[in-house]
Length: 261
View 1 (tube, rainbow, N blue to C red):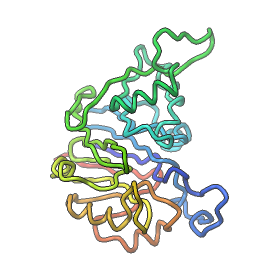
View 2: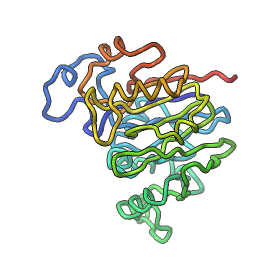
View 3: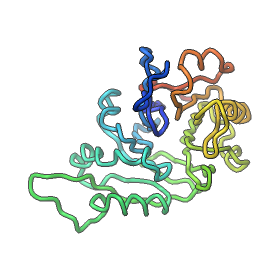
């Protein structure tokens, strides 16, 4: 199994518009953080795209990913869905709409903002194209199949809202969580690689702080944990140096391979 981080930044991205802090001016490419997204390549050869951030086209070109088999949406916030039109590049090469998996509330937002993607009666003019999605409603705690791969959606709180993370075998990807409730911790038992959001050094009402993410990661006990959804609050090199063994900041383009058991 292989995990590719497309983007690892907060909703502002890094560099942040109008900011001249040390991180935003950094020459270290690991400090350039586009909005969060990832691709999981499963042991069965399927590629699962997690979220469609605004920089999706640039991210996929940069990482050399040329095909996907399905899209998994964590939730409906703009930084996680507003690159959805870039999926045209995949759907025009398919005979059927691209499967898209999300909770019902997320689909309600997607269908309201991007009706042309999901309306089967919409026909683009000759010579034009549109992304075509096949909605598949998921329920937290209920596994679903993508080709031969089983995916478990895991509910986590995000302020007043709830979002889903995903477990695929020994890998789990959680973003925009404020905490990991007991149900999530149980669902994460035994993962070897964990991805977890870590927004700031200080507490935040809707996201785990770096210290809180470290605490949650240690409770899960994965062999390796990667922190994502990072802001311009910390330089990559400084954060990497201070984190405990087995926990590291992710960066755009990072590839993590999970050998089979």
